[in-house]
Length: 532
Image (tube, rainbow, N blue to C red; front, top):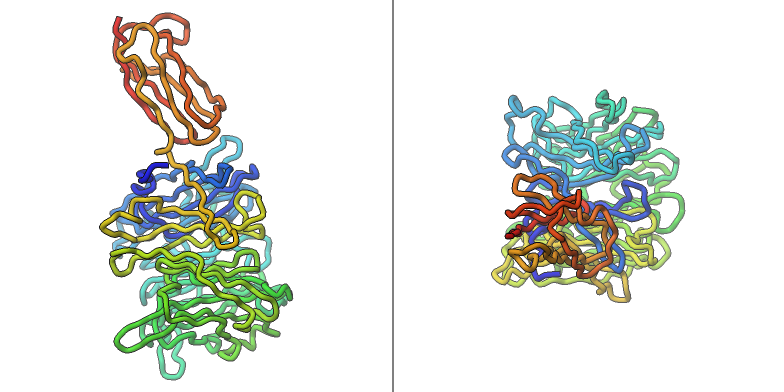
């Protein structure tokens, strides 16, 4: 790989990561959202501890959109075809002329044509004054056999703040899918407790069953912009499309504001059939407060209705690093909690016993990138892996951690242009780094001789084994001949000879021609001259 991944640099730094297998071919894909450029990028495991950039979803117009800040996989319409889902937010308040320029983009995999169909756009409520989720969840919360999308609105104290629970009736492919708003729980001026108005901008949430009764809850945290505190609350499913929440169950985690985006994970580390929910709070240092990095856990409840502040436990607290900001808390196989921050990553390994006790965790720093002369606010983002039970990209039994740099810049360009996507495999010290292959790593060389008559050599380099096509076009863009047609070639440099003839075996006329190397969803083209 070159010193600069120009393709990734153009896409911009990442915000969120998803690992899944949408086409169900047994090879996992990594999906990342770009913090700038309003893009979503697909990487595919390529073997030998490497991933390859294989698809870039169509761009969105930046004038009216905010970047996609989270990404999930689901089957909202229940047709058995998986969907990649991500929000494209609308920060401006003028929706009159741009009512369709906000919502969740749903891209459904079409197995018969081996491509994504979409985007199908859904929104929790067309009357929302703002649409800006930092986090959302797809799950069958109420146990009715249909997935719900749980939207956490982060409107900075706006009237749209709250938790929206929606589902889809109909099928996306048919064009008749409609949104059903199963429930809405506002968090804007929604309660006054101990004389403090609760005005929660919701930033992080998950779905869990903390009392093991078979009924799920939606747990979430946010910012009380009025009271300068960080509260946590939950909504419980009590039946199909039926949910309840009690404002008396709000618990304040910290008497300080925080923006711990995606700072939530769930697990059942002690395998007792009851989930734990983990929240992290990043270190806040201002003129009036100094709050440590903290990891809280809620779990092992006999009845969720008995939840109160005594049920919230602290399992870790630290004041040395700004470590828990942004997308930063992940359960890896019910063995590790991975805690990501500005430019550090910590691992909390479960030692057995009760996950509610700090002595049950061994915490150590596993990655530390000094940002050199990075500007304030620079940091890691989006890179903590959110996968299923295996937590293993390539099937070798070792979990990986995926990191995507957000916002780190420095005069040496140490981070802003060099390998902004990084994947580390679990070894004794978490130090084995994967190779990230991009279209930049494919080479299409200038033909030789050039000009030529009547034959010329066309060489190319493949960084991995790949099905490719090599096609000659005339100056009008018409296909002349396919020298290679979707054939598998091994990794390495190859040379093909063109004899100056078209697909019918007839010599072509003098003039300018183009030769194009197609590999997956990408291509490279060069020009050559035939002179007789």
